[in-house]
Image 1 (tube, one colour):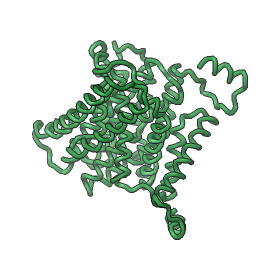
Image 2 (spheres, rainbow, N blue to C red; image 1 turned 30 degrees about the vertical axis):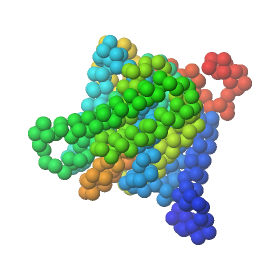
Image 3 (cartoon, rainbow, N blue to C red; image 1 turned 90 degrees about the vertical axis):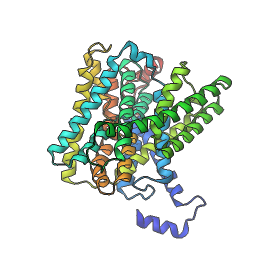
Image 4 (cartoon, one colour; image 1 turned 45 degrees about the vertical axis):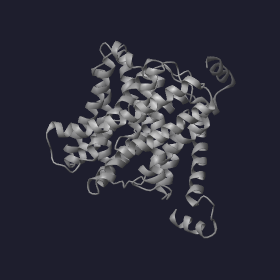
Length: 422
């Protein structure tokens, strides 16, 4: 890949630079692959995006720099922030007052995931600080992957809604803890107050930025239509500004966006429609995020030892999430079978996890690469396999209005039945 780029650079001098041409072609291929994969196999488009990014990364694609920095880091943070803002806007806090077991499910599955991964890595003789960092990263599911799966399967129901809420809350915990821990990775163990102080700082700054974002957007909705294209553009622009400001002042940009979405939902409880006018643009940003994650994750070095470590990590994490959801399922409003599929839907790892790894790598030149050598292969595996598992879980829960059948092989009678059903 580097040799091909060197040949191109001799005669191809685009005004926006060669990386722009590379990314344009890569995204075009990813879009076509995602569409064809869904059409031929019924799998969600995100699997195609991830496969294309993986192949490009393995081929030596030079359009992404690791650790993430500059424009690449901002675009990933913006994509995650927009997804978490929208995910936060789906959660009504009064729901937790009427059904507190949902919060217990969230805490249980996140805590068990971290503990399971930590002790598995320690059992495999991984250094304690590295195991702790990877365990915190493993807490986070991927609302981005799950939302794309839900969109492609047109799913709706208690399993879908509960899975989205739990993935959003696990991301909240992981973003808070990793943002606080990354700056103290080399410090010796201290008292409880000194340990909680960085967490309070991250939460405080993110809360202030998120609250300001929610208040500004609430005032805008008083005079602007939520279905207007200008309203959608303003939302994305303000989320981008909040992303830059939160990171600059020491908070977490995705966490601020998530808090902003949560608060705006409480101030404006009506259903949101601001993403519809920006459908194509939002899809492009999301696709760029998935391709970037897989390109970067594919740069990790694989070996037999790493493969075994990642396999045990993924297995322990998956079992822990299912057990955690089942453990606190009593009185939560879902059956034990539904709880099992909710736990399965927590398996994807993607953009949030990559951001967390990037924070550790940027904060530690010694421990960061070791953390990335374990976490990046796990992210690459669970972005693809996790999307497939989540799709299977939604179909088995009976919440997709589309039959899992390749469109290219469906008979006219079945296709007509599917259209009537939809």
